Image (cartoon, rainbow, N blue to C red; front, top):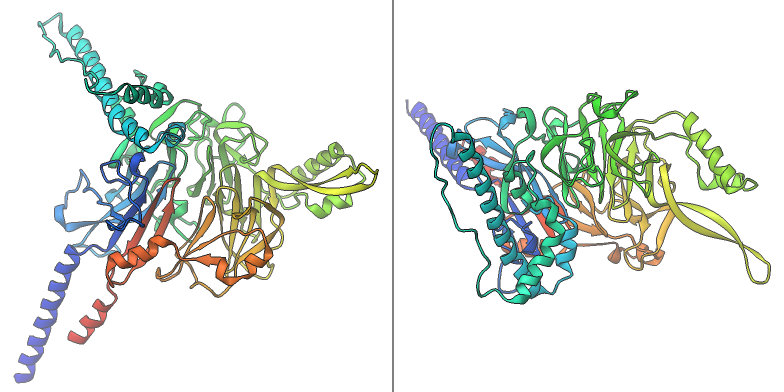
Length: 602
């Protein structure tokens, strides 16, 4: 009896401990999202336009982003938001959030609880460049005064138009007196300088404020979002999460991406959606226009031949990865077929297209011309050589693609046969024979654009390629042993490293498999498998720098500040996204000691 009573007391104590711990876990976040950078874009999600710097001695240096509750949250306080994927554009932030019900197990998947959140300026690019050139105090006046007045003015015009329309339709039955409001005017104390700056900065957005009767005014309000705002996908679809995708990338980057004023994400259904700027067709909706205000499906994602237009072709397979360049996009479906759309004048679409407003096929073929092939055909003229390569390219077999990535004006992919290809601006090299003033011939290397994918050489053939990622002007390749190879524009002096890839990061220095491997502008970020280490790797021009392991990688300054902010609590980084002027950090905040303590009690 005593043994039974003692056993019951032990079980009751264990259950009470579990209930207490569950209550603490509900009150304690299982993740955190931090942002820092220049706040005038609104991409920090603070609700203001103030800057946040990790080097600021008077503040924390990192802003903990508050995830707003879902408007359709039927479970109330029983749900907790978890960031499953993130992306940082030039002036905006995009998050995929899943509201998990704490009363259910984590294995229960309810896709209806997923949502897309945006903040900042998801529809602006050139305006950001104009504002950045202004002096700090002038830019502040433009941001904090002119935008508010512009919105108030536009809202007044919209309400008056709606009132006039309503009055006209009801005149036959009733007499309607519109609610006359005074049109907002600029502040009387506004200086001439502020007025001039406001007009100048708004010049780049004149089409944005133009009312289009086919577009709801509330859509154009999404041009500036100082706080996280929810966007719905068409036909009841919800955002995908990494577990939904067949992508073999090392992070959630292939699920969602953000760039210069436009965003792309994959839905739970496998469909691909975009929104943002579209003057070059970079949203892939079938036409070139100023803006695509709401998430819209990309057209032409089919390998079938289109007799009329690709816009009428239905999507064949679910998309598993998408990558955005400066004004172009690349995607690959689960069948290994690759597509590109948007601006392509520098070859970044990989199919000789200059500008395509819908998805077009990109074929990766196994017998692309190489440097050795050019040497073997040196007797041919440049025109004859190009014609020969074109015939060989068209007749060679098409390879299946597993991963894709995009830089500013170039793109890269990994094939299922473990090869890496690159194409676009300054990605190929030719030998030019010139004569000196003394009549002596000399051979020089000249870099040029490649309009078809060409293979990257110099990689260890005995190692498996895990992932590829593109910075603004460089490409980095992660191997299975943790080593990183790269080609492109060097960080230190801008020299071009092409032809053969060089070793950027040695093997055995980071825990594999890594949580994240992604490039941001001039650097590549690696998050270790346990999330405890974050390293930034650069492509150096000189071999001495690449062999100096003290220069190979560095720990970012914000990571040290994050450890200080956490005050000794265990910190595990989940993902890092760096935009033009801001950075987004997603961390895990799970306590590994909980399970051990529970086992001791039971």
